[in-house]
Length: 234
Image (cartoon, rainbow, N blue to C red; front, side, top):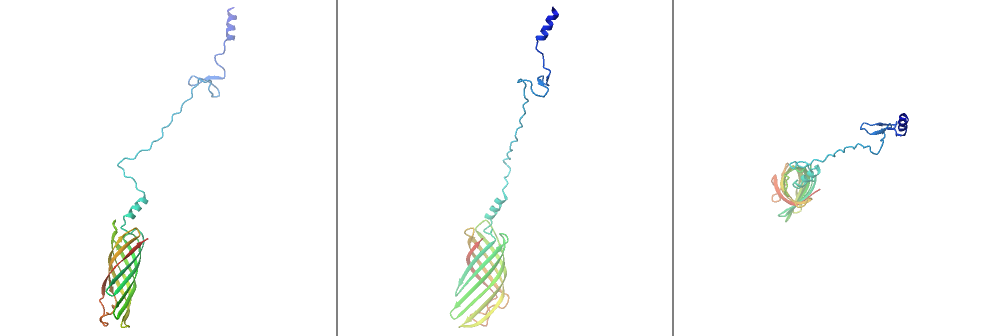
């Protein structure tokens, strides 16, 4: 009777574990295919990595200025000579004469450039008259600075040709190589326009022209003139 009761209980009791499940590492029942056996299984949470935050620069560090900004500031403080091409003109006058000069210059930087000029001089006094003209090429040095006033100086060779008359007759017509020296200042009114004042000495390297007072006597080897004119830069 006891044996029959024992066999009956064994038949009615459910199996403790299915043959297709096994205990996982955490003690949870899992199937052989690697799946979770029930809703009670916990998924492993992945740790989120913190994003690196930008490091603020120390307050005492100097900010880097872009090259374009540096160039702009240098151009503003160039003393009026940041542009390579310069056109200028000047007029001079005195007792019985008038003179003019046109100059085209190219500047390698704000300090050094080359000017090519052409000048004309006209004299009329009673029965005497004359004209003189010629080109010249000069090396120019500029004292560029942040102000609107820029001093400069130059020197270079030239060639002068003239003709002089008295009572309608020509008494001297010749030419000579010259050496030209000058100093002056440019006053910048805008970025492209200004005025200039120049004091110039011209020295004849050959025989100078003959004088109007005495047609047989030559004039001085050197002479000074003062011109005031405009200046444009591009």
